[in-house]
Image (cartoon, rainbow, N blue to C red; front, side, top):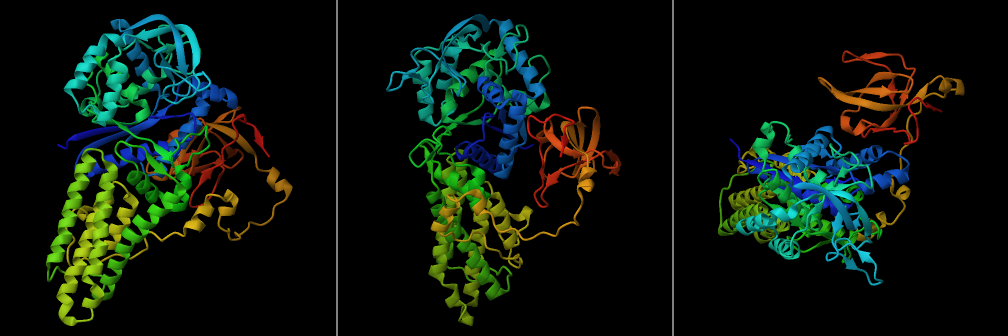
Length: 640
């Protein structure tokens, strides 16, 4: 039986579109998950969206929509970005999921029944952006004397309200003892010292775990004037996603995967994950996660990335220019183990050209071109080894050892560097062995075979180690080598036919590339060729189309039809079923609650045995986008 490995990200807060600093976490966690699968583990990779809290309620009010409609939109964007960067998660949880809300309410009730939660009154400081409470001793003051959050530096609100409290103080000594006995629990080590010295040693105060000043949250089941504190709600996702509910039997999935092997989180939320969360688990009599790893931040140059400062960079904008794998490689290579990383457009261009075009791309291109020229694209035998070949083989073995050691300890940037250092050594090997000179003398043919063979084997090593970091690129390299999926970890076999060669990464012109980030979006778009037009219609023809707004109530895949989704629509005056060929582009949960435009008077049709009464409007051919109606449109509204 495979050894299990349960890994999680912090669930993204569904208040706005994540920037590249937020996206780094899902990329890093995905790289670890892919590495563990590569090593033979049974991996369960969880991510999701944190969708409750005062901040979201206020944003929804400002937008004139319900909080659920608001988070549906933002969470859809989060999932789009996670999928765009290749996150191979096994489950995406939303804290508005029914099963999660039910379990959280039951967790709160259980702790209340145990006496760990009690009713009192809270008066103190509250940070709405971070959804965090602070005592008088924890707050800071700005230069103008304003009381500000010690974490994000934004102004705090003074609040006073009736609230439920969790007896954190009752578990403080037990947590301190656990941390002392499990030094690997909090990493990096400096973060552990920070939590112990700043929070545990000064003495833990009881935590306010409910609010009455807003409604968007999980209600306290026995006192619905209160909603459960968003962090208690959010942290519980790590167990509710596995089916945990204190009022039910433990699921097979929970028994199999809990405790988590590692929670991967940002350094700014260490307190919640290393103090609040373990104490909640202790109170529930559940095992603690094996490790909480707090990664550093990705800064813009020397400045912290912040939407309020307007200095954010988005992953999809980078991917449009550099490609997804180049974005993944940059953030993984640039983020140190402990200190903050840095990103600028200029630095991305520089690393793209040096690591991907000049090093990796050049090595693959040169080697495959030479093998095609000298041996017809067939992998030659290692006919006449030399000492320098042993040096390259040693570089391969050392790189793989460093790769594994660093990935096992979450030194991901060092693991990336181990791979690219080996690739640089292989490029040097080409210059040292000069295959083009060997090719001129027939007597050197056996030696030429060994040189090309060793280069191809080194590229295979590199592709194998690049899989967790650059999965699409690794796949393209294996295809060019002619190595099948099941043979990726095995030495390349002489006689193997290389696949079709292609350029992996073209060198970028820095000035022209920088212009792409400064021009208006419309100016960046390539010229669109004139399409073939349909015959002209009259206004009467158009008026005959009854276009109406409909809200998606339910959505599910059509069995044995990869392209089709079955949707139940509310048109206000009636409900109807429509089948649409958009399954390749949307998951059912991404459409539920959305408002679409439907041709309401289209003659019914039967698709895969299911009747469809209408057609949903969408644009595009290769990349289909459903046309969504505005938030204030009502089901049944006529579209003209």
